[in-house]
Length: 115
Image (cartoon, rainbow, N blue to C red; front, side, top):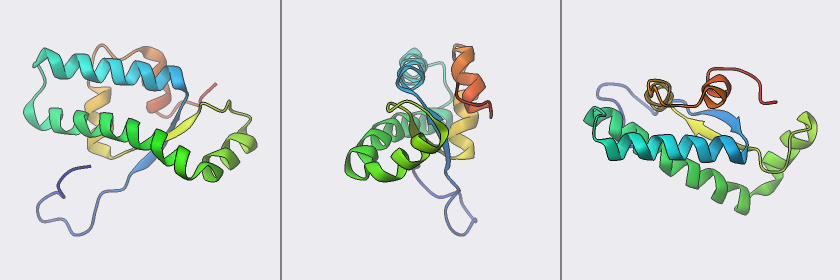
């Protein structure tokens, strides 16, 4: 997340979306393609760049503090490659607005369960 919204105290809430490695790769590929196409509004581009940053941070967070995500994975039965990707409402809206987003990623980000 970059700058705070004007006139709003505090920061936005970041909601974790549990994505496996395939979904994270598909998300990153789609976001990179949208950014390189230059067809994205400049403000949306900022949010999409933040999504790419969070994808890297999610992996780093798991490397440094693996116990938290591991507890969730054990409780849910998810594979070891499932990580929480924390997105703001603006970041999520920017991603869901991408028409090229794979349906499987859209389903998980839209509130569907990871299978």
